[in-house]
Image (cartoon, rainbow, N blue to C red):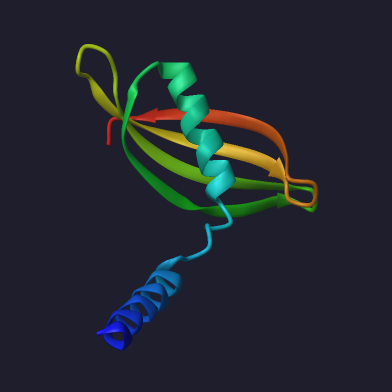
Length: 102
């Protein structure tokens, strides 16, 4: 019985360790996009999508996200969020927003 329990525990630990994936490289910038969008719009974030990263210059990169938000009063709309930063120092440069009805 003890061996069976030990085997089950080892299997559980192996599965748990294998499923723990590292955070994606854009996670820090996604958290900033969400925080700044909530601050600007004071609304509930319904959905979140990372669109991608582009290099603006040697010392500037930009992560783009699309957030779907529900404002007070029930209006729902999309907001594209552009987070610019220095990829070498990981320093935030700017956050821009563009609303979309889709």
